[in-house]
Amino acid sequence: VKTELTSKTKKAVFDTEGPFVIIGEKINPTGRKKLAAALKEGNLDYVRDLAEKQVDAGADVLDVNVGVPGIDDVALIQQVVKLLADEFDVPLCLDSPNPAALAAALPICPGRTLVNSVNGEEKSLSAVLPLVKEYGAAVIGLTMDDNGIPNDAEGRLAIAEKIIERAAKLGIPADDIIIDPLVLTVGADQKASSVTLQTIEMVRREFGVNVNLGASNVSFGLPARDVVNIAFLSMAIYAGATCAITDPMKYTLHIRATDLLRGRDTNAMRYLKYYRKHPPEKEI
Ligand code: THG
Image (cartoon, rainbow, N blue to C red; front, side):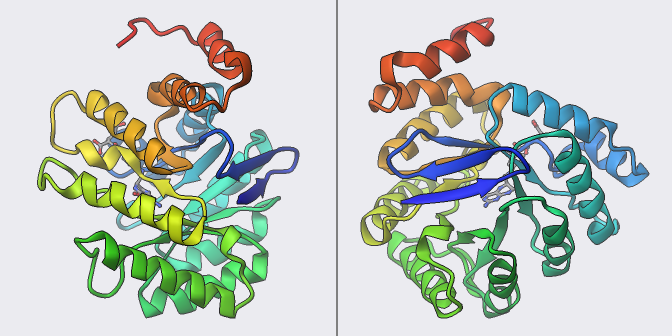
């Protein structure tokens, strides 16, 4: 299965048989005071800086989240999208729970964009899927609904199926839906990561579609988060995840290694090229 995004000049292909796709997570003010303050002031220099660093570090797509409490997210997401579309050549992932912000940003994205996200709640399905259809976008489907995030894989699979079926009714093919089985911190519940890994396997087996993760959530509240994140990413990729919203400065070399180890990097070309450009200061 292939899901394609485009910018003005470039493609990003999410291919269930291909290399892992990296969606840069850094343009997101949650827990980042410096970015939140810059966005509040309307100063986009820091956004430009984060975009540049992530693309240089291997981001295939940039996630765009401008959710600062008390801010006009509709106007701001437009400004940020315009800047990124003008100055960078990677496709975008619009990260907002607000359908009005998605509707404002979609028409100014120059190519085929990833909408992040729809979920199984009726009000999300009915507001977001028509936008995805109208703009010919692709969409991330979160496996949660009015009752929250199911604590078992069967419950999450059922929500994925509901999203895929509702999209099909509007003429959105399953191949344009990337299912996100959601990761909660393993610091709070030791079963959190295994339920997610099981959901990944089941979604891939039942629907064959691309699977995304917001992978850094798994380690929240734990020490040595990078170690936990890398261990989790390895297992999630083996279970069938095909892309992640993550930090390319920290994890791209590791992700290149997983592609190599799964036989998706001929002659280790991508791994070696990345290593030469960004040799790590310390190996682990
Ligand atoms: N699924 C989908 N979209 C998502 C998520 C998901 N979007 C938001 C989030 N989860 C993914 N993005 C981030 C962005 C930043 C961080 C984690 C996830 C992060 N921030 C640091 C922290 O919380 O400690 C703070 C800043 C830093 O140290 O860099 O880790 O699951 N579809």
